[in-house]
Image (cartoon, rainbow, N blue to C red; front, side, top):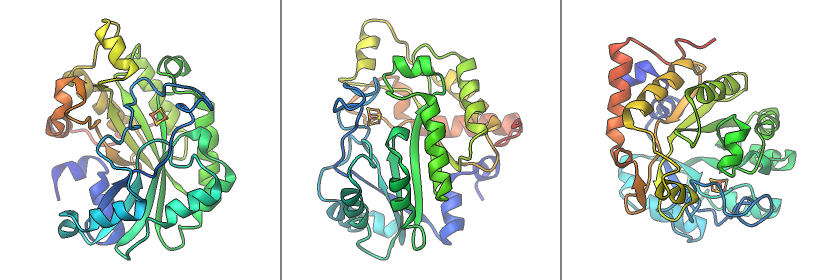
Length: 303
Ligand code: SF4
């Protein structure tokens, strides 16, 4: 077993244990928009979000076609089981019948063993949770909720469009239906101090969360964050600082949580800064090195 799998709960290992073999994700664009862009709760979106809603590499083909293309690609040689990941924009933001059609269209082949749905906490209702949970008798089901920070001042600054209390409500609804939740947090947001990150981790630790995605804040072209950066009003986090904060997160989260991601993945052609974001291995290896040198493991400081 790789050393890192012994130090924290890595998603790859979790999926391998769950499905008995290597299981990969197929990312799809579900054809949604976002209430923080269409004026329902805001316009312009979160200040770091690109025009494709964090799915810059995806196409707007029909969902079944996107899944079929992925199954016909190199991916099929790397695994036999796949989870369809509704990645960009807000993938619960539509009427129930539309949602059902979209989710149903992911299951084109018995190699598809589950769906993972990324969304906003203010787009979760009992009816939506009930629909999503209806797939769970046969498939793996999981919902990703963006939090980024528990600090409502930062949330205002990044134009998130909901209060952190909304996140708590969404968690309660989803857990009522036994749906696994993956929480997104971001390190390096404007004006955030280390104490804000610590408060975010304490906030998560009292909730019933099954997974975490830890993102580094990066700047891509055409965003409000890019404007702030160009005007000297935002300085991206350094790799060294990021690693220290990442180590804090890993060592303070619940040891049972599955770590789905430890950095952001900016599209190369759109990335403005920081440059280290292009080197995923630097983060992966940097984290492994510190955990090993200091003999730390996930949740070793969890209270
Ligand atoms: S909620 Fe998601 S899709 Fe909507 S603007 Fe924010 S990051 Fe983009």
